[in-house]
Image 1: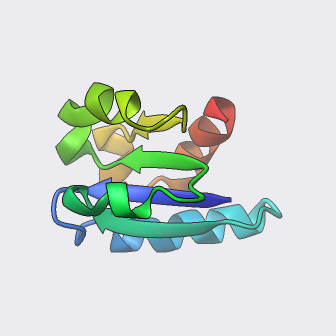
Image 2 (image 1 turned 60 degrees about the horizontal axis):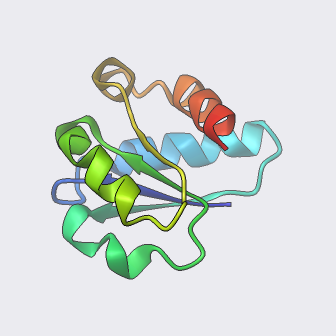
Image 3 (image 1 turned 120 degrees about the vertical axis):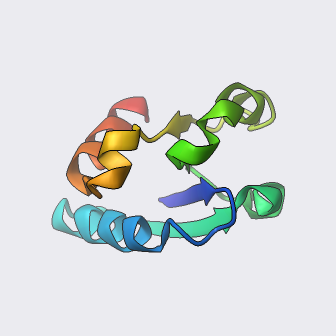
Length: 97
């Protein structure tokens, strides 16, 4: 499963990226998470199974959904992102998928 984790500049998502990959491994899922800035999202959509948005760009949720071509898109809740709550984010993502 390929997950693209998007934030404003592509920097604040590094820890969440690692925690989501660890959580996927704990669940026996093969997943790669790519952290990218919003301006590079279009270039990273090939083969993507889901897009996660950092809370700082949740305002773009509907626009990204419209151009995702049916790929599920979810905004991470600010409190889950701030606490780096990868188990909860992964659970919500799996429900979405």
